[in-house]
Image 1: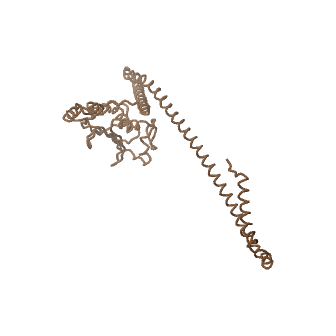
Image 2: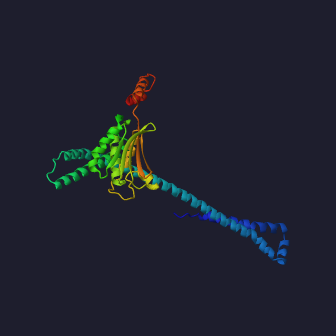
Image 3: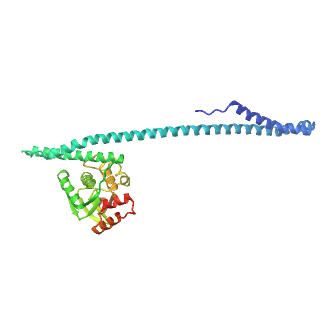
Length: 342
């Protein structure tokens, strides 16, 4: 849009300048009377002096026209910016609606896939052992791919549920080392790297299903994207239950350290398998939903993925919690939380 000043505004400033420029010589002539003509005849330079106010008036008129035009440009630019802002807000709303629709659509698809994939995993495990080596190799490949498909479906389901704020978490007391040992044993036929295991007893208060998925994702991540040596351990650290998966792979760049837990992010280095980039995202979100966290660090030649989980209260702590929960002066939500923890 081109800003244009009305002709009346331009004429107003121009006439104002002319009047200003002619007013001073006219007033001087009136006051001096006829002596002015004689003075101008004897000294022609006075004509130039008389024209100076006229020039100044015309210059002022030009400046006024330019100023008014700039103000008009400014108002047009402000109106254009307002329209662009309204358009951007509308586009943002459409994008949010589109993302919500996509998340809902993906959630429905994954929900429909979970049961058939679980059935498929069960059926593969019940297949009779082949009679020859080729059949045995084919069955192992089929079993590995079916389990990988199950992991992908589970990660997609958690991601979709988390985006809709409908991810169920049911914490309870259990032994972390026993669960990690079970997950590692189940994954051993499907991973290439043999991991060293150091599992100390760690009672935690968390959701066993969520922790199972976290452990599975971290072990598979180390196998697919880590180094040649993997170490798994559980321990108590700073009053929290800790589960670590280490590998001797190359350290991540500062940019990768920031993006590695983002959805669909992949490291730029060499990898035995690309994946869909949800394993670490899902693992961290599950840990955070249970009051813990998942972090990455590289120290002493090891890439360390560390999961922190709330510790289960000891027996004397459970008795104290129960006494507080029975206090009639406490609110109902507080009582429910303490009874759940005890």
